[in-house]
Image 1: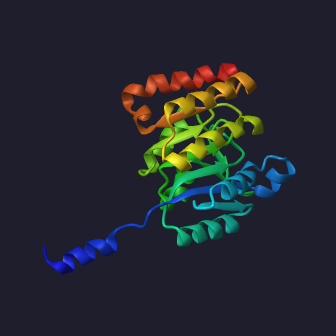
Image 2: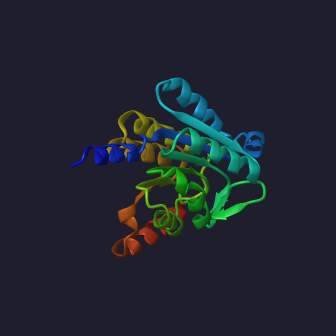
Length: 219
């Protein structure tokens, strides 16, 4: 193969993805409500993992969100995992004071960052239909961690265990997942799902809807 072809291939190689981006939506409101989980998580992980890239995008308005996402995209081409903290329901998330985003719109906001793992600290965000919409419109996405029912700050803390392992080991193993799920359920009647792209295949659709419905009885 000619040398110039090798040089071109080397130039096109993508930079390694940054480790974690924390997006906190309507941060001023969340701070007043003592729900600013994203800011506290960023501080905890930044100090705990000084050699890892952990970035915070805390915003209130559409202009701030657009600017901050452009800044983080400039700093790092991709983020392997994203934690998104927001008020929400089964139809989507309140991304800014003026913008309620359905799942397809959320996917559009995140697509340029090419996340593989998505943690949704948001009420009802882990329901089957919404999650499968994200998988459909985010080709890079491999796993979604979220609750199909309302999530409290105490329940959100159990996600930290999973996020920490993902940063250190590049994966969340079954033991750690089951531990976090069990503690959340027993201590707070919380429900935490991990969805994969395979869960949204046609032959798994009935099971996915059944899991979402069953979770509603634990609220």
